[in-house]
View 1 (cartoon, one colour):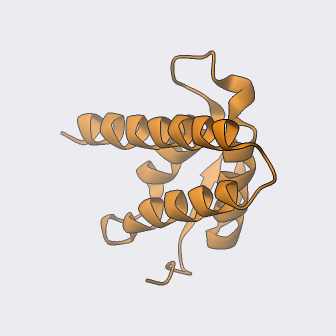
View 2 (cartoon, helix red, strand yellow):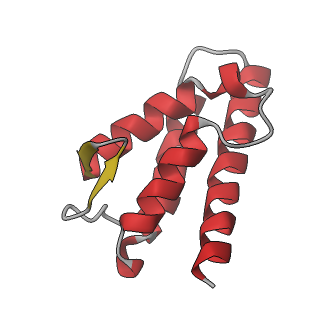
Length: 107
């Protein structure tokens, strides 16, 4: 499935198009182990929640694609297996918390 190319969002007063959303997501995902002690509200969480609020309903599937791409990217790194698993679990938690919180806000 292709990422929608017309998507753009603003986050902390900076505009992001689809490619930039992807790059920022990857960057935040790869730095996430530094933030694991926080129970939520990492910058990845904040960024995904901000994107969800601005992306049209029909294009929100891209958030799932971003997580799949991020997990693949982490899997391909030279980090040891336990670190990869921790990063993917933490990233997935942040994605799922952001999606859940967004759905709760939308109700």
